Length: 124
Image (cartoon, rainbow, N blue to C red; front, top):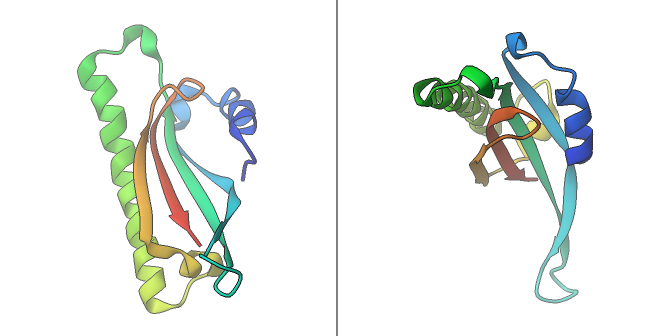
């Protein structure tokens, strides 16, 4: 679990390319929702990063795309687990059942401390 991008950098700088994909949980941020004090609520937004360390020195276009394909498959598996846990209401990690499955969003991550992959964002 990390707090911000600097914290991510500290972790990823110690990672080698041989260690495959990493799953990093980002500490949630909080926002408010509602049109008045009568329907005010706090919403937590979380994020998982699924990334691989990338050596750009000998990387061709096909290898570059392979990184995104591999990490995309992992990201899809995590997304699908969250959806399944939400439906089953049973999970070893109860916060996963609280994720609003309509809020799941996947975005590419490019050159984040020499890593590429995907982020999976969600509201709780």
